[in-house]
Length: 374
Image (cartoon, rainbow, N blue to C red; front, side, top):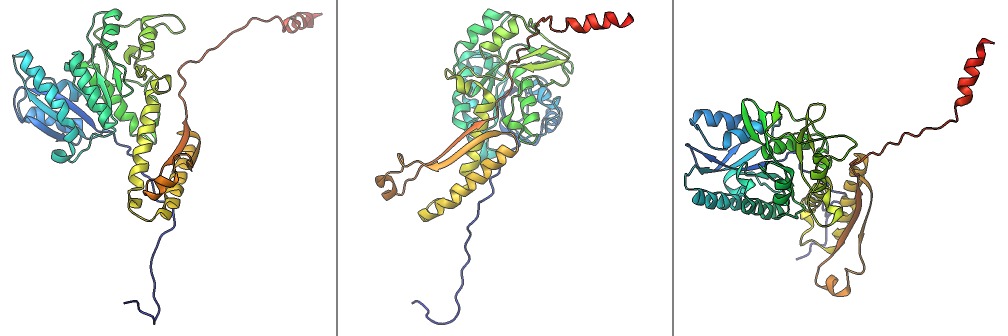
């Protein structure tokens, strides 16, 4: 019954909702242990994981090197491990590792950490093409970045390994880094470097090539690097490799994917678009099943968020609109709407060409100087 008398009131909102982008990048690791728990194990950071290794008397396995590589980068991010018992039967161990990688999609239930938009590694084991391919599939599903290892002795061997991949969600690296008395697979080193710089303000939108690798004392395979000349490092990067090499300290070199589309070969662009999309989706969940006029608030929310990205040099420009070609009478009747967000991200400098040209335009300066003594 509608009340006809008195003063009635209601509360509503007509304002842009805040959009929050995940700034902490979780790392998913599949590793082996000689003792202790198996299955899912969550650590708040790598140091906590290394403490667990000591208290559990884990003498061998790939977990220690992986956590050490991340710890040395000084990153403080959540780590989700799926631990597999060591097994002398190589075939069975491979089956176990493949199964463990698949389990990472379910990490939010036992650990409270969702690996969506995170990093996924299986140090050492990912040098196997089949295991690398499984990481690729899971990373693509989670909008994450997978990082594979390779231990080929030369350029041709690494290129042959990379030929098996063509994903926008993968990085490929080679060799071990010598650090803290260990040989650490570079997949773990790169995961630590990426997570460290992701944590900076809008760091996830930047390229993580040319980043200093902390704790590094060398690599097991030195890769030829000559600035301004043809060399192994530049050829490998052209193929989509991400390396650790000596250049004013030990640094990362390369942050490209092997996607067939040149637009998505810039991994910083891939990660930016996925993170922006994820943030927009989460910020507008409130609008689901509301009246269609609330789409104005959705558009306003996205517009304000994109302005923030421009202010922080993540985007150059954008346009938010409901495309009339997609939003037809039929889709409106069905309650189905399409919001298009066009934007261009801030590109990173991948190549700087400097030309030094001889000219004789200043000869008079010399002559005038010589004539000053007269």
